[in-house]
Image (cartoon, rainbow, N blue to C red; front, side, top):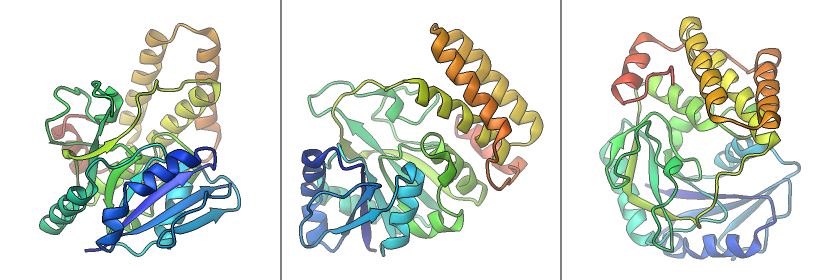
Length: 286
C-alpha cells in the first residue's frame, strides 16, 4: 500500500514547510511520495525526492487538495497543514498501512492534533459534537482536513472535495457523501500530528464564507425539512454566540450568498445515511 503526503502552502511559511517535509523523511525512505502544492504561489525549495506543484492561482483548500490528489499515485493520501509535522512518522506510516489494509470500509482517519508544548490542544481538532476525552477513538461524521489520511479510491468515488467552497465545510460535505456510499470515518488518536497552538482565526471573510458554505452544504446534501432545521439551528446558535454587529452582518451576508449562488450538484441524503450519522453521534441537524 503506497502512501502519498500532500502539503498545501501559499508560499508564506518556508521554514514551517521545511519542518513539515523534514518530518516525512522516514516515510519517504519507506516509499511514500510527498507533493508540496504552491496554491497560487511558488512552492519553496524542496528535496530531490519531493515533488513541487505550482497552481497558477489560489484554488482554495479543496481545489488545492483535488489538484494534488490528481497528481499523486498513492493508495492512501495524507493531508498535512504546512505549519504541522509528524512527531513519529515511521510508526505513523505503519499504523496507517495497517488500518487501511485491514478495513476496506475505512475511508478516512482523522488524526489527533497535539500541542508540541504539551498543552491540551484545540478542541475543534476532535471532530465530535461532544469532544470528551481526545484520547478516545470513535466513528465520526467529519474530519480534520489538515491532519488526516484518506483512501484514494474513496476520495475519487465521491468526486473529491467541492472546489467552489474554497475553505470551510468541504470535509463535512465529502464525509456525508462517503458515509452515503457505506464508508466509515474514524477519529484515531493513535495517529498524531503536531501543530503549534493557535486561536481559531475569525474575520469578516471567515464569517461570510462559513455561512455561505453552511447553506451550500445543506442545499447539496440534505432533504429540505432537514435542511431548514439544520440552517435554523445555525442561525439561532450564531445569534447566541456572536456579540459583534460587524460579525453578524458578514455572517448573514454569507447566508444570503448561500441561497443566491449555485452550490454545485445536489445529492439528497438517504434515510440510511441520516441514521448512520445519528448513530455516530451527530445527526445532520446540528
